[in-house]
Picture 1 (tube, rainbow, N blue to C red):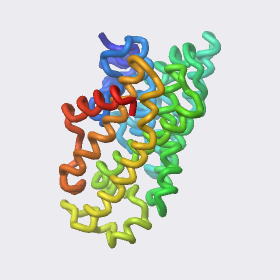
Picture 2: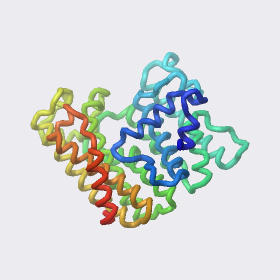
Picture 3: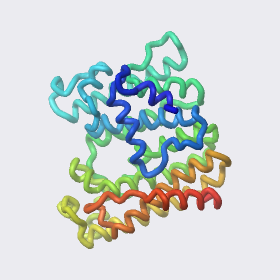
Picture 4: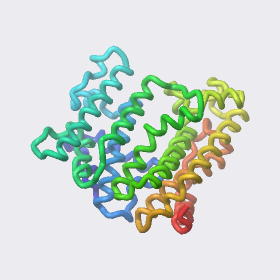
Length: 318
């Protein structure tokens, strides 16, 4: 069975193959985005949120399959009409935010203008069914605006502030879709999501460096004697591995802090949150297994290890 988000963007449809390629990236995440044990409607909602988040990230990273086509669809300037790539990406993000406005208007009024992008249109039924606000979606867009102007983070606290835009809103949306978004759960969810973002940054050090971005705090680079040139090497030296181990320990602490969230819910939601959390632990285990050399390999979670960890977290509730 395909989700509504998938069927709306199948190759040959209005959205073309590019949107399907965007959704297909879910298989490469550290955790299952919309696992089969969930009801079909719930999977649709999760894939719609993922499709939005991935679309915004791809726009901000320059990874869209058809950037000019997406710009025309959103009514923004194409790359050839902009002075530089940063201006083009910021224009795309503005166009996506305007399309987000259409999502909420269409959910309230069937006669309102429909969103222009297929992945945005997939959000309309979600907004109509659940008590979600534009705020978490806007924060994900804002995180990608930040990426256009900020490529270094002086402290770990400044990096965590970025995570409040780039990661925490996703967890809040998941809780909202399930109707369980209490203040206590939101706080625990934020810790898990920030941890998952830090882990992803560790996995992507080489890729981010190639894009001109460094998400390792500058104060920690200095503490371990790591230069930016060190991060551009084919393999990590001892100083880089020590730094990565240090940041991995920080991520584990955040995961440990947020993991009790799993024990506050029951049923399939508990299993879903256990899977998200286990994905972080499994990715950390993969980084450790690679001797923290995240430059030579992109450490990915072992699926068997992830499943076993998820089962343990599900049983313990943390």
